[in-house]
Structure formats: C-alpha cells, structure tokens
Image 1 (cartoon, one colour):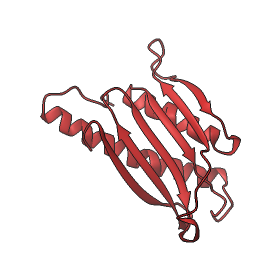
Image 2 (cartoon, one colour):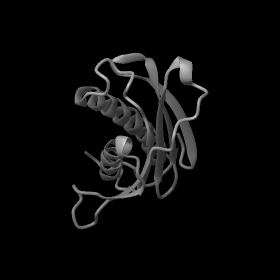
Image 3 (cartoon, rainbow, N blue to C red):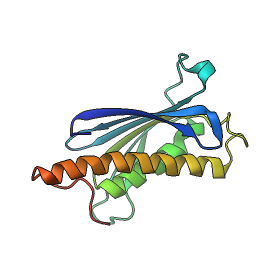
Image 4 (cartoon, rainbow, N blue to C red):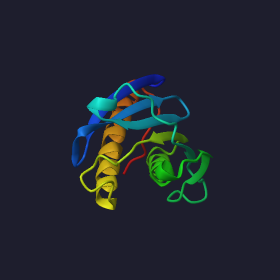
Length: 150
C-alpha cells in the first residue's frame, strides 16, 4: 500500500464466523483514514448507518496520550472508534480519522467485552501490518518512516 493509495480488506469477526469486518484504509502523506463496518452474508448489500466518526492526533507534549475529537457520534460505536483512532495516532504519530459502523450483535455473546477486544486486536494487527508495508517501501526509496521505532 503506497502513500495516497487505498486498501480494502475483509476479515472474519472473531467468534462470529458468518460476519465479516470490512475495512477501508487510505494512507495519505499527512493522515490516515480508516472506515469499518460489519456485514453478514444476508445483509452485504444493505446500507449501514454512518456510525461514529472520530479524529485523533498525536499530542506533542504527551506522546502516550493522543488527542481525539468526535466529529459524528453514534453511542453504540463511539468508544470503539475513539480507542482505535487514539491507538493508531499514537503508533503512527500522524492524524487519524476513523469511521466505525460495526455491529457485534451477531457475535456469540452479542458483543461482550471479550468479543469487542478480539475484533479490536484483529483490526489493529491488520492496519499496522498494512502501514508497515508502506513504511518498508518508503524506507527503501529514501522517504521518512511512517511508523516510529518500537
């Protein structure tokens, strides 16, 4: 995934194999945009509500506590979007926009904390892997690294 490109992926919702998480990741020179939604085979073509839209950016005075603001709030998806935006802003040291309209209602326990955390970890792994691929390409061409050293 090169800068300015868009990657669209899907992965199974942990503990709900019939449900997929659809992810759209856009990496620009100065920001990352991530859109998330879920769908079952029965509802792939039906539109989902916007959900929450959150903007997060690294805090220059406290590297471990990014700043976040809600641009569009939907209570059922707001906390997940905010946590994800803050984590990605902290890891990439760049502004991040996250749109989230995921639903965990089809998960085995109906969206327990464990199910949400499993989905959160799966999404973070995939997104950071995609951004690391950009970093590897950028380093080989002499561009600045996108992910700071761990």
